[in-house]
Length: 145
Image (tube, rainbow, N blue to C red; front, side, top):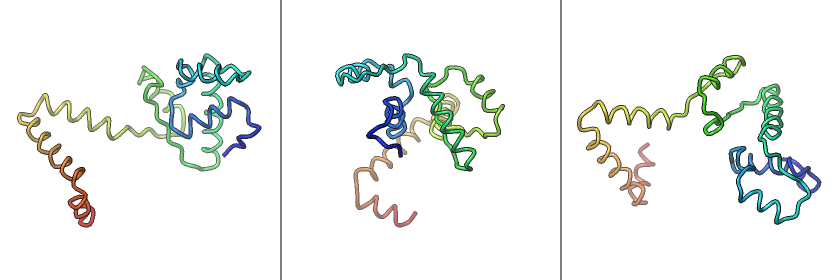
């Protein structure tokens, strides 16, 4: 954790972005800029994400060199998946796809190709809703898992 008292404003922003898992574009949003202006901080957040991304990159590389595991989420960071794949291939890192996204793609495909999938999904939603609403049933389910 960084020392918050005398930290450079950009480090505080990066700390906050990391702490609550915000995308780097957060600093470009009007609300954040208005807050910075309201607080009368004599520091202007860079319009470009480059500086923040470079600092994050240095931190990630330091962690990687120390043998730490690093997980990066790239949703909304790039519109070009081929570029992202090429960048990862130039490193020694491995790429893992988001399970939730893969599941959603599989379900969309199944809805198009398999009859009665919507009925099955409806039944699944009903079962999940039951265990979400009923704490006794949820407790029993957790015991048997």
